Length: 162
Image (cartoon, rainbow, N blue to C red; front, top):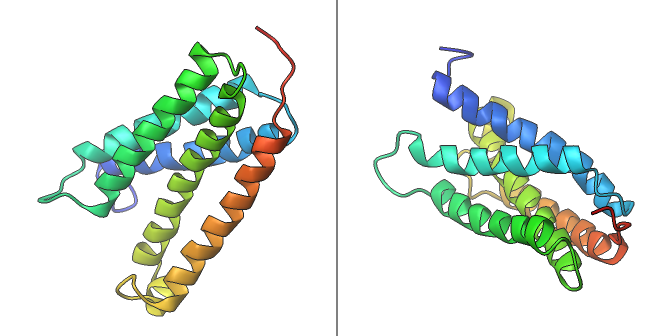
């Protein structure tokens, strides 16, 4: 066990954190009209692997995390199609920007939920995950990502480099 986690949980967590960090860098690229292809590919790959690996973690029933995983994979499929098949032509530019930001937000949404579950000082504020501190934190995260998503959709006009 690594840090009290099975190797599978450790890999899933590591992929998630890599996806979030790479996603934040890719988001900076969106906000500055720069595709940052390497960071973007790392973000998309790590986030796909995170969402997919969540389905093989031990569970005796469908959890909210499984639903988030399905939604994330659908959003990521749209982002991949817009970026690599449609090559950001026309409306696919803003569809990609919106889908990429939504996929990143879903990862951060789960990060916040896991932080409240696993970090004792946060768990003390929201032991069941339904208390106001948890809801407020998730709400603030949503508002921040909606604003960032709108700005990304407006600003992301990368130079043609295909």
